Length: 148
Image (cartoon, rainbow, N blue to C red; front, side, top):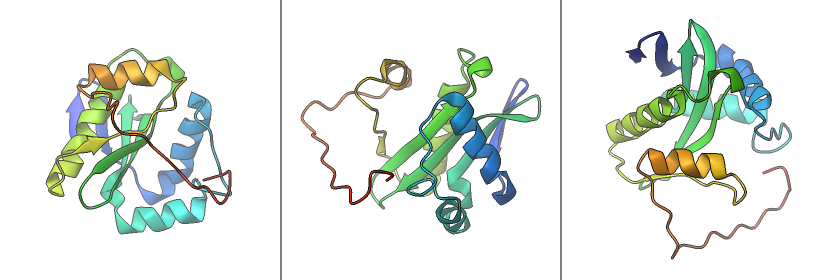
């Protein structure tokens, strides 16, 4: 998809889903294998939109991932994770830009992200990438299970 120096951003393959999960875990991202991160659910989602599973490869190895979704109007950048040894090198911003480009190709031009209120690092990252905090929007959920 896109090369930047030794960094290459491209869709991951289906057999790399387990590598994506490892990046989540090694990055400290919560992993919920019986809920939203169920491997079978991820594979199904992959088969529907394989281009929505992006990886950033540094030296040929998976260093960061982004999982994209859309609701037909808004595009969502989800589960963005960068391995600790690859942070502060611009990889996350490059992955955000690549995620936006994937969504643009689908005709989507409104990009969103949910960030937990105590995740200042992610807030700073997305502000740096041009995202604005929407103070007039409140987010409500109804979770039937805690692992979603």
